Length: 324
Image 1 (cartoon, rainbow, N blue to C red):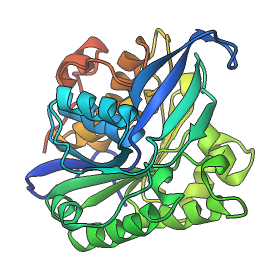
Image 2: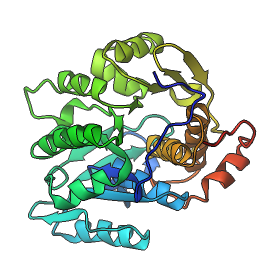
Image 3: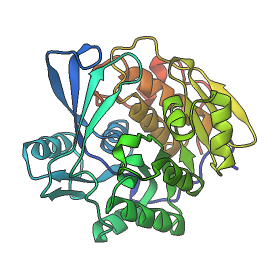
């Protein structure tokens, strides 16, 4: 059991967080509404890459493994990684179109349209193996699990992470439309849950995985499958968190919402940065809410984040921190 008032024991490694998966162009509407906008703006996107950049800006080390096309969008994404000071050696360029998500600007949960080709062209090569073995935490989402060859690659990652004591964070952002027709993606995602250390579904993610149910019922769904720590985020209602023995409700820090795109990635970023910096799980979760609230005030998935301590102070979270 992972105690909420405990600090995680992280082995000393040369890298803190390895994020694996989709690197995308987010086309976000210029106006609120369901795809009725006259224009869209191009943004850097993809949850793992967003998280890798965020944590790097807040003071911990990160790397990204992904794939983009040999096209202008792929160049745009790589240039943004370079500008953010990220190591791009783990990003393959492949003979496929760079993947894209079209989404309406929203103050609630945005509804995406997916266009995929390059993002799942991942292989377990020497670079990935080396980076994984030298990282403290590895993070991935449903995206690479939904298609081959990325799925097989992530299955190897899970085995190797377990073997080498690398903590595993999984974002179960299940969308039926990113899976192949006729495949039971929900069942596959459920099979991954007992193999990871941290899982952070939203209420919408849980509804797509298990069908409509209350937050409390969904929490039990994840725990029954063997989840070690579940952070079930509930939008403006905060989150329900459980380690199977203790269930705690956390309040959101958000006071202003301009755009929800990337809010979940910001939460993960604050949570991981808090863990690496030695916060207890409880304080790391609070850090996640603070970073998410900071991001919600801006457009796009990526914003210029200050150090985690400055964000925590802005939201009055300095009291109660504990370091290992």
